[in-house]
Length: 471
Image (cartoon, rainbow, N blue to C red; front, side, top):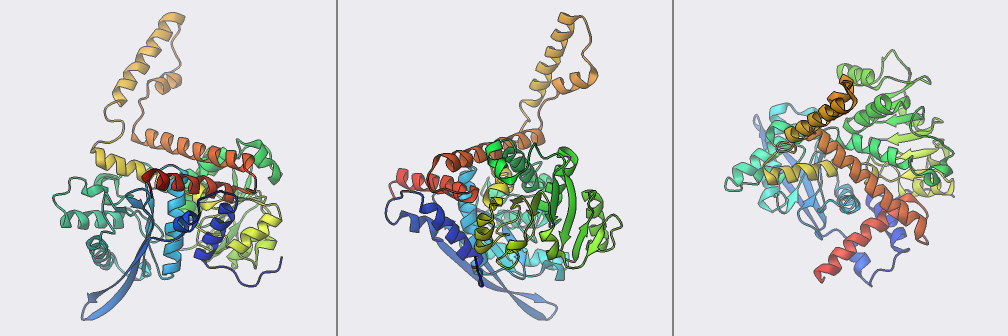
C-alpha cells in the first residue's frame, strides 16, 4: 500500500467513523448528524504583563449534545488548533458513549506553551480563559464540564472551579463545573492515576479473550510481556508503573521528548520518572542505553507498543516498520488513519484510543456525581462493611476453633473507601465496554477490527438517544 499524504487528525477520525457506519443501517442523514461537530467557540483575549500585552487564542468545541452536560478536557500546548480540538471533541462523544458515561463530547484548548510562564502568569491566563468560556455557557455543571488534558492538571482545574464559583456564588453545584480537581477542592481519590489505570484494566480485559489475543501470536496474560512505552507523562507513567509492578510486565524501552532509553532486561519506570523530574529528560539515566532518535525506538521488536504521548506518532512513513504484535493506544490519535490501514493489512491488532484511555472520563464521571451528591464515596457504608467483616471473622473462628490468619482477617474486615470504590467502578467499566466491543466484533458482518467495533457500539447508543428523544 503506497501512501504519501496522511490525513489530519479530524479527517482520520471521520474516516474511521465512516468505515464503521458502512457496516451499520442508520436512517438517512443521521450518520452525518452524529459525525459533525455541533459548535466551535474560538476566543482571543489579551493579558497584560508588566507594560506589554500578549493575545492568547483558545477553543472549546461541542461535538454532540445527545446527553448533557458535554464532557472533555482542556489542553495547553503550542500546537493546539481547531482541527485537533474538533477531533478530540468527537472522540469524547464516542468515548463517553462506549463506557456509558452520561455525557456528550466536548474539548477545549489554549494555544500556549505552559513551560514559558510562571505559576502566577498561568493562573491569570487560566482564570481569564475560564471567564471567557463561562460567559458563553462553555463551562457549567449542567452544560459543559472540562477536565485536565495535556499541559493542565489539578492545579488548573482548581483555578477554573474557583473562577466559576466566584461568577456563580448561588450555584450549590458549582464545584461540579470541572473535574480532575485536587481531592481537597472537591476532587476524587484515584483521578490522577485514572487514565493510566484504565489502560492497565483495558489490557487485562483484552487478554481475557483468547480469540482476540490469538491473531497477535501472544499467549497467557500480561506477565512477562515486553513493552515499549512512548511518553512518561501522567498516562504513560501510571500505565507503565502499574503494568510493571502489578502485572509483572517488562518495560524494555521508554521514549520521551529528548530521546529514548532501551534495556532488554527491563527499565524501572519509577526510577526513570524520578530522573526525568530532576533532569527534564531521559538522557543520562544510568539504567538503560540512550537513543537520541526516540521515534526510531517505536520500531523496536516487542510484544506490546503503548504510544502514550502525542497524535500522529505512527504514520504512513513508519507503520510498515512497526514490529509490535499488539499496539495499545493510550494517547489520543497516536496512529494516523493511513497508519491504521497499514497495520490492518499487516494483521497487527490495535486497541483503539477512545476505549483504552477512557479511564479518565470514567473517573471524572464519578467525581461529577460526588460533587452533585455532596458526599464522598464510602462515607456512609465503610464502617458498616468493617463491622460485618469483623462479625464474619468471629463466626469463622467460633465454627473452626482456630484463629483466622491476621492477613486474611484484615482483608475480610476492610471496608471499601473512596479509592477502593473508584478502582472497582473503573475496572467494571473497562471490562463491560470491552465485552460490548468484543461481541460486535464477532457477531456483526463487515466489522473487521476493534476500532470499527468500538465505533459501532458508540454510534448505535448515540443514534438510539436521538431516536428516543424524537429527533
